[in-house]
Length: 322
Ligand code: HEM
Ligand SMILES: *[C@@H]1O[C@H](CO)[C@@H](O)[C@H](O)[C@H]1NC(C)=O
Ligand SMILES: *[C@@H]1O[C@H](CO)[C@@H](O)[C@H](O)[C@H]1NC(C)=O
Ligand SMILES: *[C@@H]1O[C@H](CO)[C@@H](O)[C@H](O)[C@H]1NC(C)=O
Image (cartoon, rainbow, N blue to C red):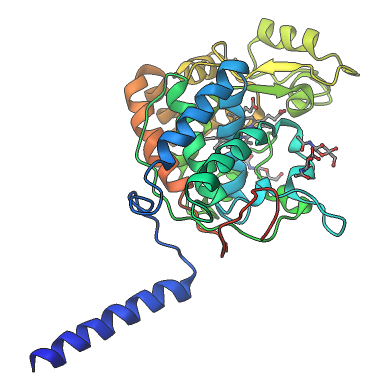
């Protein structure tokens, strides 16, 4: 009897495991590398720290990289793959203008391959680096669930599935809900725009030829719009011209929400958060309380970074499939 029930519960466990596997959802866990690569977190943190000392734009780049990775094919490191002769990869797709700092991921990978070869996925490195980027910029920290696998596919044209900065609230809601993310997540994660920079092309729709009768988006603060027009003239030729996403672009704080309420956000998609009462109430809450923002951001980041991809391997070089 006893041995029968042991073996049947063993069989059951096996079946459950097989089912999980069959579903393609790699269950993530916070202690995934405890036995196989215990130094993974401290290694990534020190690489990110060192890179941001040399270049203050690194944290924003890493946070955006993780968002981009997770929204296309799940968090599977597809954003890191280089194009090949046969294939144009995501990083060479249309809105790649802001993707950079891939070398930071390469550096972390190099150390990790030396310490624990073939163990830590590139997708996990991106997730950890994004968390460190937020924390090292003065934001909250959290435990990152790990165990993602790297994908073997990256297609430039799929970056069209990213939400566009011109999206209205219903388009944003749809984009997020397709990935299992709520309106709460939309508002909290848009707070990622407390870090970083946007090129003129990403918000020119709001400051030139906005509508037949209005050159400028009327929901934008007037002198703020005028200052953006100076930095980004109609026929802008300066490739790196643009604007910071908030007035403290290297500090992770709730300033983004305060400015948003004043009509001083950069994208149509930011402004759109004020056009629905649910999202507007959340914006107001986060503008008033940095603590509430951080709590919500952490929760939503864990959700976003758990969007499962079809990854199957641990890449040896983050830029190439094995
Ligand atoms: C809600 C939908 C979103 C839209 C439409 C959107 C759009 C954009 C665009 C157009 C840029 C600027 C690209 C450029 O001109 O260089 C940008 C930058 C950025 N986004 Fe978003 N984004 C969204 C959500 C997110 C999320 C969820 C995060 C992370 C949690 C995020 C983090 C960032 C960061 C950090 C930057 C600055 C990048 C840098 O300075 O290198 N965004 N976003
Ligand atoms: C991947 O592509 C980048 C950008 O095009 C290039 O600089 C880099 O050398 C490539 N990486 C490798 C390892 O070939
Ligand atoms: C973006 O794509 C263009 C065109 O394919 C490419 O030349 C450029 O190197 C890419 N930028 C980054 C940061 O990968
Ligand atoms: C958002 O844009 C889509 C596509 O242009 C449109 O069909 C929809 O009605 C718009 N929604 C809102 C709330 O403006």
